[in-house]
Image 1 (cartoon, rainbow, N blue to C red):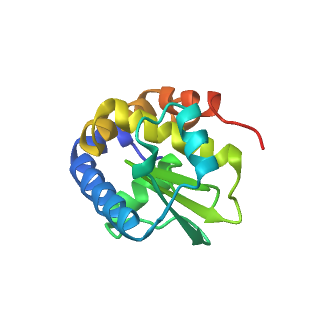
Image 2 (tube, rainbow, N blue to C red):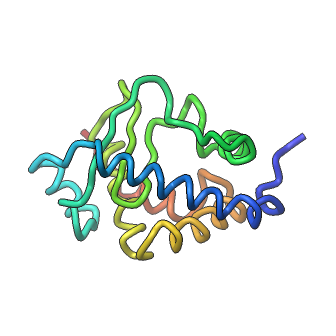
Image 3 (spheres, rainbow, N blue to C red):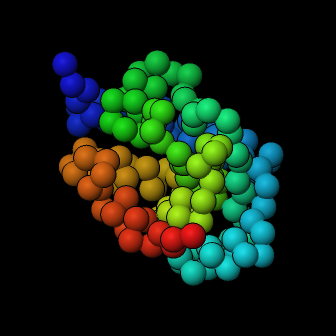
Length: 153
């Protein structure tokens, strides 16, 4: 049985936005600011306010939502799981050790740019999640755009 994000999205979207806003706040409060080199990288991929970006490095896998339905949706759609090395929520980036790389950071910084263009997590997530419904994760336009801005090490 496959997970149907299309039908679950209206129910899950408010929970996803709330979870993302809470995680962003945590990382903004505890994460590390970008280095000078990382700021130049952020500007290169379009970030307009790189001084606001904070990074959290975690061991193992990305933190999962505590809400069971939200967690299951994230795992079923590929947004979470053991193969995911990073996630961006507004100006906060969470990266799994040992996957830190310029390529991954530039990808995640491009997502920061996308959030900036949309104006907020609440504006970005409905568009991003609808893209995943319509195109699946790997082919979602925001993911394709982020991959096109990856900078090799």
